[in-house]
Amino acid sequence: MLGRLNHVALAVPDLAAAVAAYRNTLGAEVTEPQALPEHGVTVVFVNVGNTKIELLEPLGESSPIAAFLAKNPSGGMHHLCYEVDDILAARDQLKAAGARVLGDGNPRTGAHGKPVLFLHPKDFFGTLIELEQS
Ligand code: CO
Image (cartoon, rainbow, N blue to C red; front, side, top):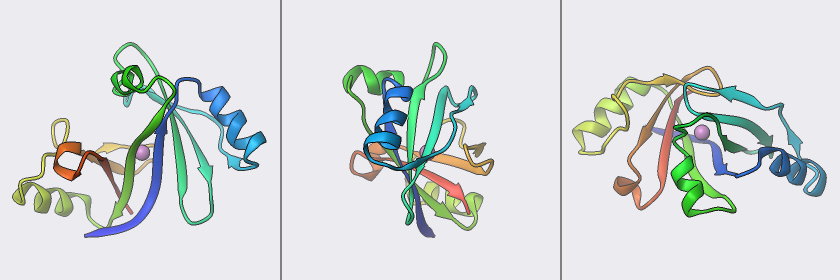
């Protein structure tokens, strides 16, 4: 079921500062900020060749990363995103195995315009997992 690591996501309190650090200090290629109001975040992607780093800043009043940043004020690793060939088949297989799918269980459109789902971190050793249709 599990395919490539699509990205590692870091929640950051100040996206402009994080972009400057990755672009200027680390010398990385960083995309332009993309607002995703339906996910409550603004994102950029850092291209590191074999995968990407997603930098997430809260957007709006009820951002799903606000509580994470309240606990981790300087930012931190928020989730891992793995690719799957068939997101609905993956979801059904995971649910049958007892894993909890967040939200209403239906895929939503993610930052790459592809369907994504999130799995409960308590079912995967404290790590929030995003699945993206490849
Ligand atoms: Co992500």
